[in-house]
Image (tube, rainbow, N blue to C red):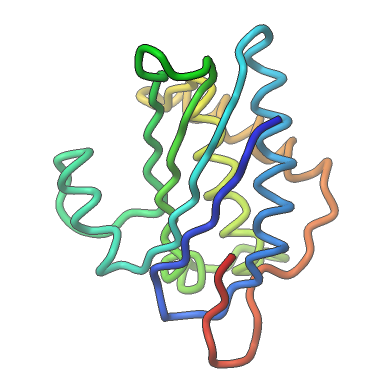
Length: 161
């Protein structure tokens, strides 16, 4: 069974960590189905803001500035149990401020960032327009199969799991 850890390191918005964890578990299930025979052990989801994700973007991607989501996949070290280990660095601030499409909410934007991160954990790549389009279709399909609950809370205090 996969373990999901939520680490809230941002203070720009209150996030319902329990709802986020349920969503992450569902998305991990869809992603795992794309990698039959591979064991998924643990994924850590780091909730960041623009200021928090910028140094991660520089260190991992060698890109300047903020982005929406960064994915890291690790194989176990010798002697550790088998299974994929992953980290998703998700920009909550960007999800809240992203331009809204018709019927699109900040909750849905944040869910899309998570779906995109889990899609990358399967080995999917978005380096070309065709690859990017395939990923987006798959991610929207995953989200379409779920009943999305609100991920953002309206009160002022941040929530952690």
